[in-house]
Image 1: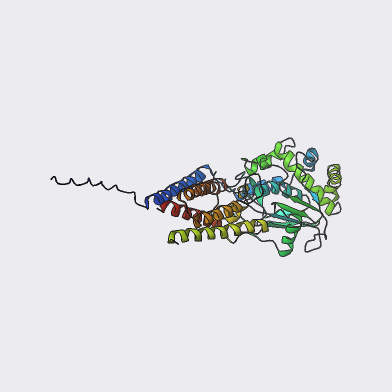
Image 2: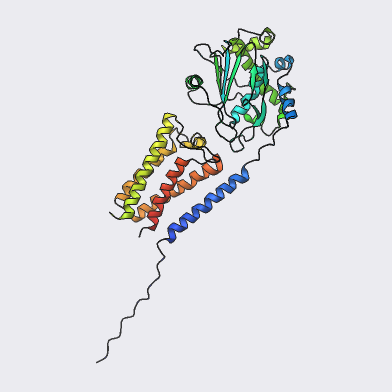
Length: 275
Length: 130
């Protein structure tokens, strides 16, 4: 009688520990997130260095003292007429003058675009102080679009008042807030929340930019100011064209005052186009 | 009910709640309760063109409601392969949304991150479950 041979014992197979797959997923995600931040850092352009106070003043002086012949030579230029007639109680400033209300933000490239013609147009009716050069966000579309900011600006005019609200700085940190009545204007005439929003005495409203930020993309502030002196430049046709349309809308609100600005053929023709 | 299964269902319900909040904020036009500091900025993300499903006006968070709701249903009667496939879909979507937030928008939305973390939790439970 032979002894029964023992059955071969199956060698135990080591199983992968249960934590390995989840840990691999977490590690993979961490690597991906780090790679995304690296890509973001690599593709984000550096903001331009700020101008010295002298250079800043030169840019502001240049664009706020353009000759009337320049405005007449450009006419509507290549501006996209976004000016819409609105109805409502006349918007007036603290002294009873027609008020222009601007609502935007420093990070916003379209606000950066629209400030150029707005400053130029308003400068024909009064004087600014405290205007500073800046640029839109480095991390948004059309990064570092050169512009000016209303953050610390004051405006004086015998024809109209300006109220400007920059809601955030170029890094999107909160900056200024509209009053309740100003917020109501935004809600009423800019229900989509588009910025920049400009209300001209509750007679006209503009939501968005009247030309593409590409027009001034990559340029220095001084280069933009210099380009505006040539009525045939792309920048002048877009920016001064927009400024002329805004000027015509303001003239409608001021009763065509002053005559030296509003009485010319260029502005009178544009006023007819506004409706 | 096993603890992991209960945890997954809980995470799914939390994900539905977060997604409903983001969808409601979108349609109401409110700014979500969210700090703005450096790269943290919910408004920048939620007001970007990527906050809606391409070619529609439907917020991405609405798709989140659907994904989490289906996850809860699947976890109620779990089948391993189905859960793994559904989780993989969620994980790939989260990676794509992270790419949009970090690389294209350059901002992080905390509410969106909460939803992403809940997706990752569900994925980890599905993968780690024997």
